[in-house]
Length: 304
Image 1 (cartoon, rainbow, N blue to C red):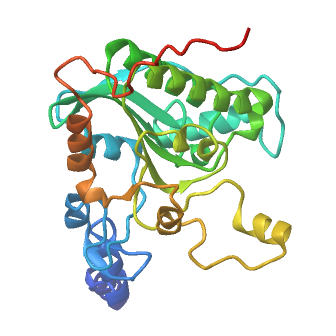
Image 2 (tube, helix red, strand yellow):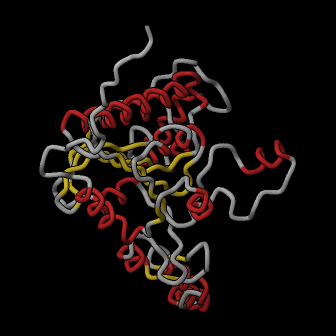
Image 3 (spheres, rainbow, N blue to C red):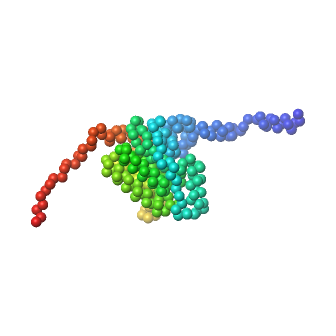
């Protein structure tokens, strides 16, 4: 063996530099909190529903993970998962809209930005919709609006409560008016659901903005939010430029909206499933519902 071969073998067997070892150990095993910087064992973080055990920061989760957190095992049935968006405007930007859709479908494994289905939460029947921010920022196009509308109509027919986990940047501009009309369509379906005296609970997560906030996200009988979630319609800078004044630091947070009366309660993710189950039980009557409003009295007219 030559001296060169001896050094080559030594180099091959030499231990990795400390920084490279740390990087390989950390990848996938540990997660760094974006809020406080604390490193947490990823398995423990997932067991805590992706909530930082140190500062209680709520990391964003996928729709699949959210369904697993809320729905009882073995009770989930998906609805309308075959629906996909077309390209009615032939929208062209830096990349054609159809190419963008295919890219996000491959990246997320989803057809669009929401999953809908039927299941049970602690034994209580529910119709659940879960938006996924990974798919084009959770934007609401024709498929998102159609799937949510069908979910609500199915729940109305089955006498089930509806729960929608909201996470969206707003309406999807690539579909133009077909996107904006989903605001009215979902709202109309919720009104029919309300007329049937059935429960609807939206859960506002980070972020919930734009046309979703202006429609089904704010039409709940009880509106819940996750801690420190960003909730609003227009962006902060747009509002400040329009009003020509500085907004409070906590503006458009769940805590700010709670004080203003737009949100009924802020529920940590680790308590969300039990809270939803309790609310459903409180609003489910085993007997026919009797109106608390007294019958209208018949008053004779004095107009001749």
